[in-house]
Length: 211
Image (cartoon, rainbow, N blue to C red; front, top):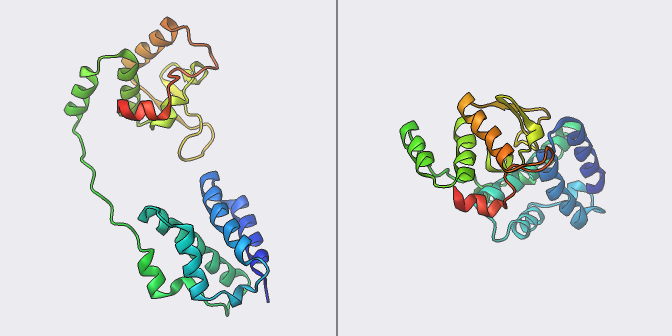
């Protein structure tokens, strides 16, 4: 019978060939810990109690969304093994108690601001740096991390090249209005930002407090 270490290896190889980097990291985190605990055991010998204990320890004091995501990784791992190698294997994650504990978190409805409110917030922002950052997030839909990673080399007139975007796609770009482009170029020139240096060299926590 297949060992856990073998099944984990096959599943990780599949993700290396077919999944984006963010997905790979998430899967590797869960399965490598699962492998450390059960690697020499037959995968068929892993009981529902084993899985529940493992997941409870892995997700202790974590948010429900994180708990669900890590449960989903293990659930998918078992389904992959069943579909590719062991059709008679039962998925222990199908247990109703486990599924209930790691149920999907109900999303909290965020307040959606209208355009006039967003424009007013940006207008009332006192510092040019913060106003530019808010403008990039509002007009181009950029995330804070994407704004913080922006360098002059990434600015091509109205086109901005995103470094390390959330999607993990290389060469992803966004477009900004001409007025915002001129302000950004003026800021880069006035602050003498080197081509390969960050336009906004502040920390993630500082930017969040600004938002």
